[in-house]
Length: 76
Image (cartoon, one colour):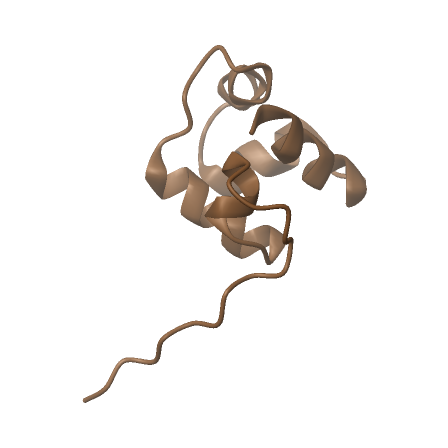
């Protein structure tokens, strides 16, 4: 998982600070996510998946399919 979030970030030529700002955390905290020192909270996983246009399953290594799942639409 940790390698995948680093690779997704680097593929877009973004800094850890840029992603940290997106998640409203410090760069040091994000660095700990990438190194595996800290587990990534589910809220942050959702934000990362949305930002990188992929699925949480891809990020955590449950699938190698980078394309996100289709999203359900809320019915009124």
